[in-house]
Image 1: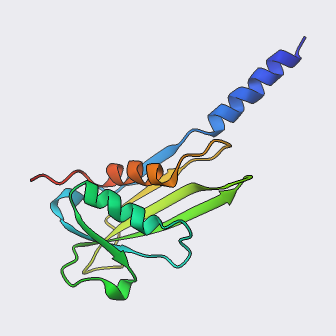
Image 2: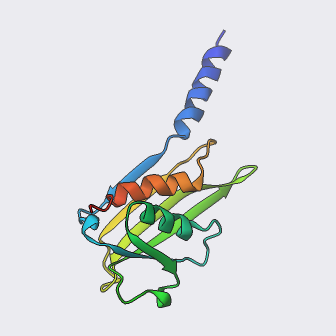
Length: 142
């Protein structure tokens, strides 16, 4: 009987499809900076900018968010992000891309990170943000 083997293969494929991939690029030491501004995106339907600020504050950074024109002059780094949502009987985040830029040179990217979680299983957006921010930013040393 080949049906149980086929069902086992399909189940394994579904489980493997739900694995998360987190990647980081850039070698800058972001821990030496203290003041971070998160640029709010117009297409942010889940409030990711607030989640990013909360996580940065938990790590010990002075963080705030808003439109780029609201950025304080004392800002060291600017965090930009893109959130990709999907819908499968409920909305959930499938991908989160983050770029860290120096405040004085917005066109240069110091570090990037990507959290990609395909598949039928989902994870709360706040947990995705927490993992990604901890991959990018070390806790502040006091």
